[in-house]
Length: 59
Ligand code: SF4
Image: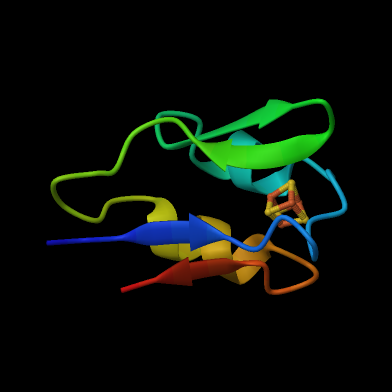
């Protein structure tokens, strides 16, 4: 099973993850959160790569 997590302490709320992959990532109070865990990876890796502070991990 895929598990996406966001290190909220690292997140700077830039919105890149949401811009790249808004089915999985959202922003609330300028901190990213996982809307729902994906069944299969589509844009999540790209979102992780686009994060300037490496706050997104995919397992
Ligand atoms: S790309 Fe990274 S820093 Fe930007 S909102 Fe998403 S998790 Fe936060």
